[in-house]
Structure formats: structure tokens, C-alpha cells
Image (cartoon, rainbow, N blue to C red):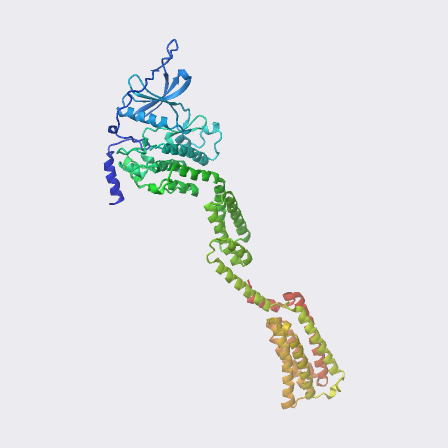
Length: 631
């Protein structure tokens, strides 16, 4: 059977198809459920005023009508004997006889409940016609419903001790109502008609639960019928024979809370049937714009299944008191959530502003931390703090601030794939560091300078020795002598490089320079051997070829040293041309050019070692730009 069919069956069972009235008015039990009361009660004399002698025979003097309902009316009266004002409730003259039983039962229930939040009963008696009279404390106050609708009601200004926030004020009132209802349950009484209209705040802000007219005892079977106020009813109250329990009053307390949070009762409709249908369904309310914790408390109190509600009014009261204690934490976490939303927005842009991101993260992270300091179990603050850390950790990984990201990830309860992303970032960073080290001119710069200084001294000394007749008359040198000189020079160079290989091969830059020097020496030696063994060539021609080979070799080093390589190449071509032009001075020209080249190279390497890329020619800069950024 569908839910609609179930309610239609209940609607037919209620017998209320012809009932009229507002949906916030109380439905009472049918007259046949009562037994007439009023006989045997002590007589209370009522008069309009004292007689001329001020007779004490009149116990109550009617002053004015305070309110009137379908079955009863309430008057303000004066009690001369005790010199005080009281409220008296009587049945209407035209009310059915069952109204007397209802009033009698209400008086008995209220009289048995002595609690600060339940209106005190002073006396129960009967008038001259035998109809019951309930004498109660007179309250000069304001209905709670009025205060909910008017947060700036003047009454708040004269009452002290209430919170300034309307939300907090009304939650404090609801807490007092929970206390009264819990006390009634402890005494076996179910109210069944809790709503803001039945809660009154006294002259000094005292909270009173009123109108126990449809209350019932928990230990007695339910009288069949739909009783209560439709706009606030629990689902089981719609069923004429549904079982009632303390959870029923918990639902009614939740209905009051719904009106506090939204300004309206939980069930609304254009007809009684529509309102009762909604009460029977009791769908979970949306509560848009309500603080999360309060919304969850209200939804639990309004659960359709009684088993899913708070077990008792005290459990609801404890949850509300916890919310009050943690209200400051909730405010902090709400503000921090706004900062977190701003952080989301910033990180959703193509190029987030780093300063703005950092500021939004710091503000949200600090706010959530402060909220948790105030209330360590604040769920919104816990979730927000974790979300802020995840967002910032992801951002820092993208920016490759990996140490910062690692610190954030360490504080995330469920980091997900962030550790893997961090590891991948570490690997990328390490690879870039390896590449940067491989292209670092300053790596082992000191050792490289020392080596090339030694090499330069050796090369210059050896060249001078050759040109100054240290070995024999330079004019008598043959191509074979050039082979010997080249072999000695290359061998000594190879020995020096082997001794300094730890530094000279420490990265690609050093290795390329070192290998180029070895290649130049080997090419010169090979050229001289070739001319010596297979070609009938004079010394000057061999030296010219040497210069051209050196120029060709150096030209291949442009990717390392930039446009300087082309300058050396052009110089080598010029040396070869001069040697061929003046062959009789070929050896001297070659020697001087070699000495100049060694000195200039040493000075150039020193500049690069000392100043890094700034000393490299513009050609090298062009090469780096073409390569693109490394990070």
C-alpha cells in the first residue's frame, strides 16, 4: 500500500473531514471520551467587587478577561485574602459537559508538576453552579511565538540575562521548555500540545509551559482520536490509534525549534487534510541558511521514526546546551569557511595570485584552528581545516614548494593521492637539479681554474722552449720534430687530465671542455703524422693545417661557450692565412698565436668560473632562452 493510500485511510479514520479551524489551533479529544467532573470540589465564591464592608466571603474578584477559547476562558482576578492577582480558568457557560472534565484533568496534571518552568496551580474549586475553577499564578508576560516573530520586541530590553543573539535567546528558552517536559515525563505525563503559543515568558523573563488541557498519562492507553495542533504534530499523532511515547513530545519540541530557526511551523498547507498529510509524512526539513549543527539537531528531533529521535527531552537539551557552549566556535568556523570558499575561488583561476592565496589560506587555517581550540569536536572546523590543508598542499606541489607541501600533508588525516604527487614533484625537482648541476659553470670552478692554469703554464713554457732554440735551431725543425712536439704535448696533457679527472669530468660542461682539449691535441698529432708519413709537406703548411683543425674543433663548442667559439675559429683561420703568407716565420707565428690563445682561454675560463652565466657571451644567453625555463 502506498504512502498516499495509507494517509487516505488514516484521514477517513479520523472522522475530521468536516472539521474547520486554523491549523495552529488545538484539536481536542471527542466529547464521548470524558466523564463529567466538578462535583465534590470545594466552593470558590466569585464576585465582581467586594461588598461595602469588604467582606472576605468573596474569594475571587473578576477584573478582566485575559483570553477565551472554544471550551474555556481565562480571567484576571484579585484574591483579597492574600492580596494578590491570580489567573482563573473556567469553562464557558455554553461549553459541553466534557469541558469540565478537561479542565479538571488539566488542573490535576499541572498541580502535580511543581517545576520552575510549569505554571503553578494555587487552587482547584467549583463555582456556584458546580463548574470547576482553576486558580493559577497570574503571568504578565509575552507568548513565545510573539518573541520569535519579533526579535526586537521591547520585552527583551527589560529582561536581563538573555543573550543578545536572537538565535541564542530562543535556544535558551527551548532548553527551559525541555527541562519542564523532561520533568513531566519523569512524573508520567505527556503534554501533547507543545508549541510557541503555549510557552509564556513572564514579567522577568521566566519561562512557563502552559495549556496541559490535552495532556495524558504515559501509563494509560491512548483514547482513540487525533489530538494536538496539526501544524506541529508528530506522525504518530495523526494516526487515531498510533502509540504515543516521550518521543512524541520530543518531536513537538523539534517543531518549536523549527519555528525558531525558520519562523514557521514544520507543517503548512491550505487545508487540514493537507497539513495532516505533511505531518504524517514528516519529511526531513531543508533548513536552508541554518547553522549546520543546529540543523542536524532539529532534523533529529523531527525524525519521522520515533526511534531515530532523541531518546528524551534531556538528550535534546544536552545537544542544545552543547551548541550554546560552542556557539563561539561555530561563529569562528563559519567565518573561516567563507575564507575557505575564497581560497577555492582563487585556486580556480588560471594564474592564482600567490599572495592572495597565501592570505586566504592563512585566514581560513587560523580561523578553523581557533574554532577547534574553543570546541575540539567542531565537525565543520575539522573538515574545513583538512580541506584548507589539502588545497594548499596541492597548490604548493604545483609551485614546487615541496617542503611546505610535505609539512601540510603530514597534518592531513586522509591525504589521498597527495603523497604520490609529492613524490613525483620530488623526482621532477631532483631531475632538474641534476640537469642544472650538469650545466653549472661554477661546479668545481676553483679546481678547473687551477688545472687550466697549470696547463697554460706548461703549454706556454713548452712553446717558448721550442721557439727559443732550447731544443735546436728552430729553422731546422722538420715535420718529424713537429710530430714529436705534438706527441709530448698531448701525452703531458692526457696525464694532467687523468690526474684531475675527478673535477674535469664532474659535469657535462667540464667534460665537454676537457674532451675538446684532448680532441684538439689528438687532431694536431694525427695531422702531423699524416703529413710526415704520407705527404711531402713543409713545416709552415703543416702548421697552417694545425690552425685550421683547431678552428674547426673550437667551432663545434658554440653550444657550450657561445659566440666566443666563432671568434676563436675566425682567429685560427687568420693565423693559417698569415702562416701561408709568411712561411719562413710560420713556426714563430704559430707559437705566438698558440701562446695568446692559451692565455686568453685561461682568462675566459676564469671569468666564467667566477661569474657564471653573466660572463658568457650573448650567444649562450640565446641558447638558454631557446631551451626554455627549467622550472
